[in-house]
Length: 192
Ligand code: SAH
Image 1 (cartoon, rainbow, N blue to C red):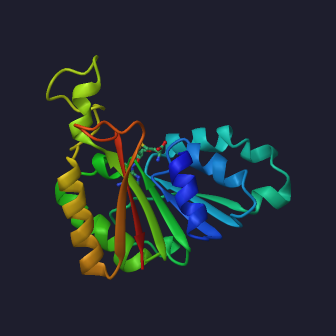
Image 2 (cartoon, protein in one colour; image 1 turned 120 degrees about the vertical axis):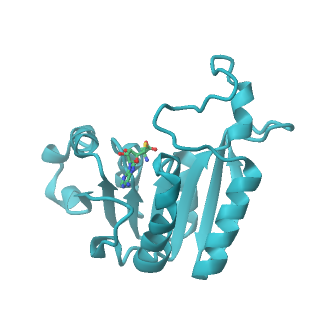
């Protein structure tokens, strides 16, 4: 989350939408930082949004703070006007929850329609899984993950999306970098 926050700050974004915000871990950090004037969290899980609302103590925020943040119930695989007009979007540990046949729809929703100036997106690096002692060989990190990519797979997905939709992309590792299998998490920053 610190790496995502740093990338968002470096982009100079004043408005940020957190796509697949879950229980609002990133939203809390964004809210605590005055640089972000308009913050929005979207998730398909209503229950997660309720948790986010309570973790943010939304009902007790002073009006000036509450005005900065909006929570939206919606899916990332359908075009949605509410996603348009943000300087930046965060997509943190979300794409691996999408069914591969739905990825193309997600790409259009994000890169073509929402079209923020900057996108900060993370996903697990599957090569790192061998370093998790408790994880059986060949298993993914989470029961709801539909896939986990190698560094090369992520790079080629990101390059293709950037090229197709007119963005530049830079990828880095997040977490302790392992000389053999890389860092646990891959982070891509797309700029238009
Ligand atoms: N970004 C958060 C949550 C990651 S878990 C964090 O890092 O803490 C993945 C989240 O993506 C879940 O909250 C899940 O409900 C959401 N999600 C999965 N598929 C989605 C979809 N199609 N549209 C919107 N959100 C989705």
